[in-house]
Length: 266
Length: 176
Image (tube, rainbow over all chains, first blue to last red):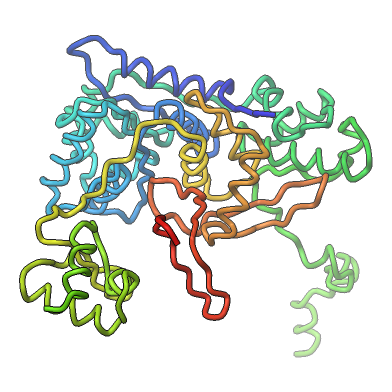
C-alpha cells in the first residue's frame, strides 16, 4: 500500500501556489505567501510540496539572527560555509539561480524580527527563483510594513481547515482495515478544530480501539465517552470534586464571623 | 630512502584523503606511517585536508585540489523524500513517513518506510517515543540525529572483520 496525503486541500493549495510562481510570466514577482492559523496543516503541506518539487525548506526559529538564517540556508542547500553574510547571500543566490528549485521559508513570521525579511528579499533578488513564505494568519498584514517585499508577492494563499472530505481521505491512511462511521468522523472533525494532525491522531485511536475489540467498524458507540484529542488544555479541577470533606459548609450552618466576635466582646 | 618509503608514497599519492591508519594499512606499521607522514609534510608533498573528529588530521597530496561538498541533488529518491519528511515532522510513525514521501514521482510503501525507520533507529538517528503493539498501533519515532539535508542510506561493505579485536578492514579488491 502506498498512502499519500497529496489530495488534501491544503497540500493541493500549496502545490498550486508553487506551480503558479514557478510558471509565472516574465517580469512578474516570484515571491508568494501561504498563511493560516497554527495546526491547520501548513507544515504537512510544506513537507509534501518539498518532496514534489525537491524544494529547499528552512524552518525559522525565534532565536535566529540574520547570520544564522543565511548559514541555515547554506547548510540546507549543501554548500560549504563561507565567511560574511554578503558572501553567503551571493553563494545562495548563485546556486538557487542555477538549480531554479523553490526556497520555502516555514514560520516566516519570525523573519519580521531582527530584519531577517530583508535578507529573504536579497536572496530572492539574487536568484529570482521562487521564494515561498509560510507563516501564521497575520503574516500578510505584517508584511505591509515592508513595501518593497509586499510588492514582490505574486499571490497570497490562505490555508484551509480540515473538513469532512479531508478526513475521509485520511481514513485509509490512519485507520486502515477499519470502517469509520460517518457520525464518528463528523465528531472527530468537530473536536479537532480544523487540525489535520489531531484528526489523524483521533483516527489512529479509533483504529486501535476497534482492533483491540476485534471490530471492523468504529462508531460512536465504540468510542463511548472517551475524550477526543482536541488540543485544548485540560479543564481546571477543583479540590471539592475529589475530597467531600473540603466542600464549604451549607449557608445555614455557617456562623457569621461578625456576630461571633460581638458575642465574644459582650 | 628505502623501497618501502617509495612504495608507500606511490600508493598514497593517488588518494583523495588519508590518515596514518590508511597509510599503515598499505603495508607498514603505524609508527612508520606517522614518521612518513611527518616527512612528506616537511617535504611539501602533502598538506592538511581537514580536521576530523577528535582533532584528527586528514591529509591530501598537495597536487590534489581540496574536495568541496556538492550541493544537494535535485533528484527525487525514496530515501531523500523519507529523510526530508523525518526532518520536518520530527515525530512520526512509518505511515506518516510513507504518506508524506509519496510525491515527486516517488513511490514509498509503508513497509519500505518501516524498514528505513528501523535502520535509522539502529544507527542512532531515531529514537522510539512509543513502542508498537503488533496489529493495533505503530511505533512512533523521534528524530534525534539531524545530520543535514543528505539522506543517510544503508550501504553494504565487503571486508575483513577480526572478531578478536573488532577491527574491520574494508576489502581493496585484487588477488588474495
